[in-house]
Image 1 (cartoon, rainbow, N blue to C red):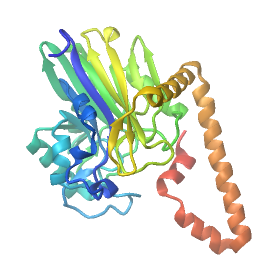
Image 2 (cartoon, helix red, strand yellow; image 1 turned 90 degrees about the horizontal axis):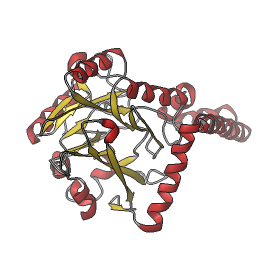
Image 3 (cartoon, rainbow, N blue to C red; image 1 turned 180 degrees about the vertical axis):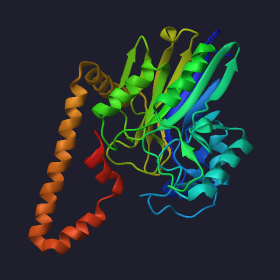
Image 4 (cartoon, helix red, strand yellow; image 1 turned 60 degrees about the vertical axis):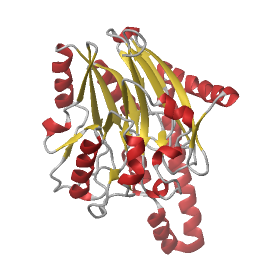
Length: 354
């Protein structure tokens, strides 16, 4: 165990190795990361959210707005650096059950534990368990935005009573419980009020670290005596560069037996035009940290909820204004064409996300 009596836990957000990343021109995914990032991905436990399937099985799920599937030969060198990944997200069902089975079997083959999905709810909420020099740690995965088809033989872990009961049993057995939680609206720096409440609830249920992802951009951090919540760690490996999606956090924890004694450091990764990653330093890093402190302060003082609602309202106004312009220019056919350009995810965020 590193750092005397502490466990080094390294955590990242979304890891997507399909679509543009798969076609990036690099021969394997590990080459996307600068040497200094690879050095950071060394610890007693390394974990992240695997935002894609691995392999070639299955066929595209018609209800998925995007389909992510990585090549095993490309993905293996990077994912072998991880001890456990969460598959509880909105892309695990992109290619149907055959692709899920293939991915789980492949992860087993390369020795990476997986959480958040299973053939039963009991399997889905079962965590990856570690005992490192006497410190017992359980890492869970859950989501609010799954995309498994209705007839799927798999199920996803969701935040709620069943998950919390499993954590409670492990807490009684002396485990530290850590949760990957894939939830929230996309491309916004402020968590929705309901998501903020949900993650706070998870922390109070005994998860001393909650690792949020799905919004694609970095959001604030909230630390109390109960533990720490990273509301969104951003896209670690992905193929998007716009709207703040080119930066993400790497969280490096020194875990103690008492969560209140945990310490953590944060590194910021920057994605370049060729999708390769480097670590920010100097003034560039300080600028991100200042923004992160502001976002975190707004969560603490309640301003974040108001800012989210302003953002949500501005999205509606822009949609209304652009729709009115389209109608004036081309009538109902233009409106119909516009509807075809609106992604399912963004429409869902506007209509249902709170």
